[in-house]
Length: 252
Image (cartoon, rainbow, N blue to C red; front, side):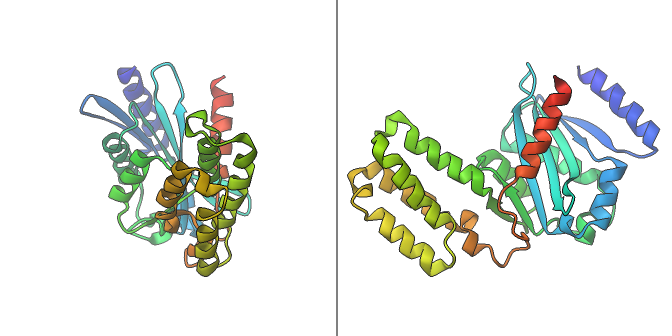
């Protein structure tokens, strides 16, 4: 497989007349980075590429558990690709190696002529991915995708091990949404205090503890606390999820 990837990468690079795909081995793991000529033009010509970047993983995309990470920005026409990496492991070291390899393929003027990379990066709550992105782009602000955050809380509430009664789950979920969509920081703190001390919540110390842990990270997910960031109203990475579906359709 590795030799086949090398051959295909070399052939593609020869066709394009530049290095658009590259592969490296690191500690027994393989990373592949892809940055096509079209992607290079998007980097140089689309302002949003320097403002907000979405990164998401497909999870296991084949029998060898390879991971595909798509990197996109947004536009009036939808998501625009900024590159992709494939890794044979999902740990921060391997992902960071893939991201550095991808960044080495970028031409001058990438991220709309911002040498330090994008201002903001949106991901799901994958610790390995977020650590890798922070390592490769230390000046970027990392924020969480709102839909992934809400899904995570939904799954926590519906997990039978947490012993939340069925009739209380929707109520707690609705109250948590109020935190995410609070219009101001004062409304956010008020909504948190109200939920943490509510008659339903106090019946479940595990929920109160979990809520406190999530609230401590509020600057990563509260919409009212990202008004200074150039998100242009985008609070989810649905662009990458849609592209992942297209990729899986191609594989099938």
